[in-house]
Length: 269
Ligand code: SF4
Image 1 (cartoon, rainbow, N blue to C red):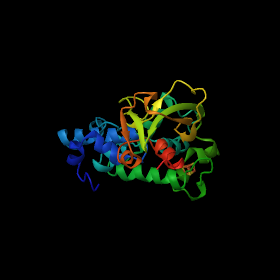
Image 2: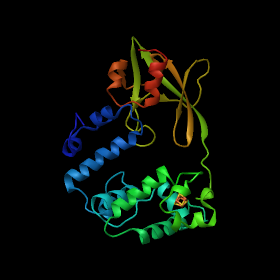
Image 3: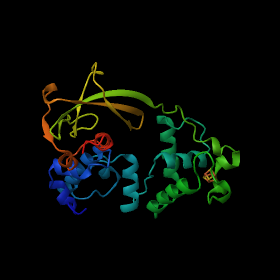
Image 4: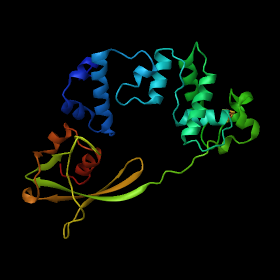
C-alpha cells in the first residue's frame, strides 16, 4: 500500500516490482492475478455486476458473487465451501456435495432464499453463521437462528453433512535442486512464466538426486502435496545459472518462500 497506493499505480508497475513486494507472502500466482486485475480495472473501470466481476483475472464465481452482492446490491449467492455446508444442511441435501449436480442444486436453493433488498448482508450472514455456528462436524444447532427452518436439524443429519465424494489425499514428493554458490553469492535462474513458482527466482530443478552430493532438506506444503526439497550447493560451472546475487539482494526480488527458508535455515547469510 505504501509503494503502490492506488489501482492505477499497481496497474502501471513493472511485474518485477510487484513480485518483489509480494515476496514472502506465498501464493505467488495471486500477485500476478492482482496485477492483471488492476490493469483491467485501470482500463475498463470498476465492474458493476456479477458477470462483469467474473472478467477480472483471479475472480471466480464465489468472489464475484460476494462482490456483486455486497458492492452492487445484486441478488446472487456467494458460494464457497463454508456456504455449501450451511445450505446443504439447511436443505438436508444428502448427495455428495462436490458434484456438478449438487452445486447446481445448492446455487438454485441459495438463490431462492436471497432477499432482493439486502443480498450482500444475507451472504455475509451466511459466512458468519458458517464460521461461528454451523461449523464442520459439531454444528451448534441449539444456538442457531436458522434452527426452526433447517431440514438437517429436523432430521438429525446435521453433523454428517455435507457428504464429500472423496477426501483429498496429500502426496509426498522429493524434489532436487542445484543452487550455485561462490564468494557469498547465490546463482539462481528465473523460472518459466507457467507452472509452480512462475516468474520467480529459484535454484535449478534436477531430474533426480545427483550421486555423491549431499543436500540440505527443507519441507514445503502445497495444498495437495508435501514436498521435500533437497538443495545441493554446487560450483559456478555446474550449470547455467542466470543471476548471481547476495542473499540481501535476492530478498528484495521474488523468490519462493521455501528457498528463503532454506537460506535462513542453513545460515548462508
Ligand atoms: S440448525 Fe444446525 S445444521 Fe442447521 S444451519 Fe443451524 S447450525 Fe447449521
